[in-house]
Image (cartoon, rainbow, N blue to C red):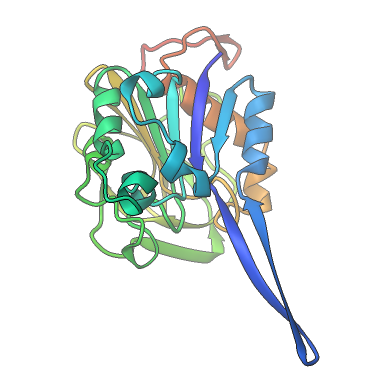
Length: 263
């Protein structure tokens, strides 16, 4: 079974309700990836979810710790959260650079996927800040230096551009609408699998002995609306991407055993 570490895709909402003269403050942890976790479990993928507020402290700090997983999926968690372990941020002590650690791990055979969101790629107001980092070096796309979001509230239909690759095998050419994405540039040695408004939506790349995937829209709301998450290809798309990243050739894909002939 493919073992995945999903880092991010949660947030803490802090709200103040005003009831007449009296305010009432409350907080709540929101899990954006709940639907994806259900879909991947149904597809036989073993996912450990590390919530965004736990990433800084508990994300792996060594190659050995990373190697407990086949794939790391970064979704809507900025580079600062990976860079600034509490020992560094609060204690002023040196700690491993986990962006560089991911680069080393992928070159050694690991699989890395980044999914889009306000704190992915370069992100809202540039706050995700993966441009010119070790993670950008290994992704299939180059990241812009400023806010890279493209909001499409009217809904834009993605199009599969490569029918043969294992990540998209068996999926239709046109997918349900998405409500936004991040503008990136395909690296010359990457493979484009799907587009949105002519821009990169899904791309793959071989890096050393490892593999990477970029999905430039969201795996959850708001860019992934109900139409996309209720699609019968939703779980299959991401499960196939994760299996490809893990070089898993045992799973059935499209009714036949998966292979790496069309990578």
